[in-house]
Length: 194
Image: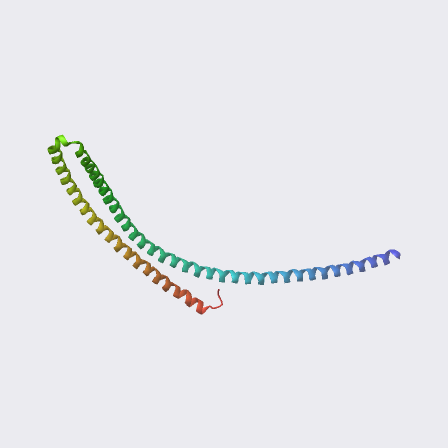
């Protein structure tokens, strides 16, 4: 009899334990499902935020691309003008080298004039040499005058190139101002952006 009572007592305890276990499993399942639901909602919000950020970054990238293309076209124009100026400077440097050669030749010929004091015995021959040297100096001075005229023309070309560069810089500032108009329009449409 004692065995039957103890069996029914343990069966009742097992039933109670099973019911408690079932309740615990259901409450655990409800908690897990609510956490999964919250995570899904957070993931959806994160996806929307990422999409909006990608769209905004796309607009910024397109704006930067347009700006870079405009700047590169202006820089190409300026580099063309600068290369023309470099050519003019090279021509001027070549002319200066020629002038230096003529001046050196003149110095050598003028140095010959100092020997006249020591050549009194051969004055006639020395005077003929002096006349020849003076004629060569006249030719050299004429050539120097021609090179100076050529140099003036090159300096004029440099001034024209500088004027072109000023025009290109003005064009670039107008382009930047025009491109800034779209940014100002965006600022007017979305004043809450920094």
